[in-house]
Image (cartoon, rainbow, N blue to C red; front, side, top):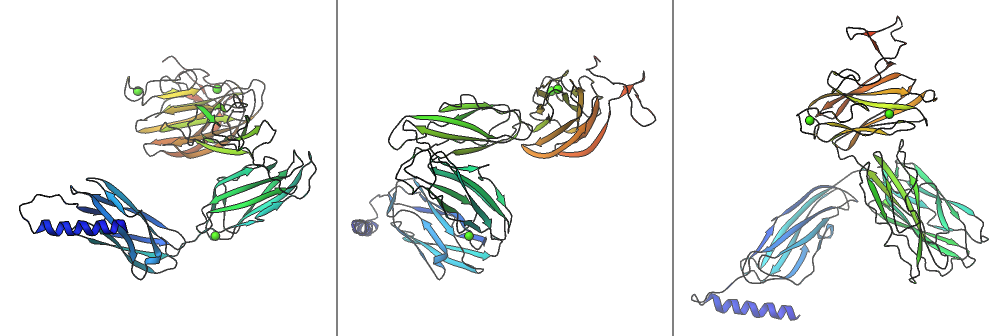
Length: 508
Ligand SMILES: [Ca+2]
Ligand SMILES: [Ca+2]
Ligand SMILES: [Ca+2]
């Protein structure tokens, strides 16, 4: 009410001034962008969102008295702004506008801004949009509360929780966080990030192992892309629930990360409701296939770490326990390691002793030639522009025994064709191995292939075409060449040689 009176008084003052040409005075000047909003097609049950910028381009304060929606379809729109709102000279305010169609129809409404701008005391912004059909996911969780009943301390009871998709589009669980007692645990992976196709379901098995007799309670909060149930809460109860308040494990979860980097795991925001000191227990829950990461450094500290090796998804878990012996629910953090180099090739294999080598060859370069074949004996040749290292390949990990990984990267490759090849260099008593190559272009996995290999065989995976970032798959698997004096491969009648070809880089 006070503001309304103020507004009125200002209007009277303006009236006096405008009749007196000689007086210089300042005005507010409201500029709004955009002048109208068309949300276009928005699927029913989903929302379209945008913002409208309001700028005071005048010299006096702009007083916005009200922002209202009107028109037959006003209910389909909403606006976020706090009024009254005062904007100083050059100050900008952002009005959040959302369109949420209820059915398959065109919608229109008007957004009206009332202010002390004399030129446009009432400014109208037309809003429009069309509700259209699109398939949506529909989450169905059963049960919404799991009561394990009476369970003796130190013993374990199990129960299942079903997460089904009753909709027509893929359901993605964007987050799945457990709160409360750490006596409840999911057996298996946390489902955060899971995708469930239409008509399918995912069963989660829960365990309950009480450490105290007084009961346990907790919640499991599932967030998904279901448009009308973005968050569901499942209640967990054991031995009557108890009245504990639990410490909470909190991970400052940073994703994406990069391959071959030290990754800090920060649990320092973890809390105890009574301020008791906490102990920390980090666990490695998952690594990409082919990764050699198998442990966390300082797993008992609030700040732990590991060194990522290859691209892909790493998952860690954290449980904190207070000095009364009460543990939090396990919190997990999934981190996607995305290569920053535009060209990133990775090799891993499945036996502990064998030494396989990754080769990347420029254009028509020969196997083990220098500088054209980048491999263990030619790790950072100068390709492309001389002296410029950004277009050079680099063997960043050279593994000489089991599992790999090895990878060869180029920050900014020059245009052309690159061959990817794997050589089974030394068996170190291992027999055949399964080799896997992944190739990332511009941070995206574009090719993955595996090949069972015998000692001294080569596997030509394919040709990388740059700048397209595509892989032409050749998949040629054969025994290492022997060459004659002319540099031609010597082949037996069956098309392979039985004598080792070059095993190190040539000097010319
Ligand atoms: Ca739903
Ligand atoms: Ca090797
Ligand atoms: Ca270069």
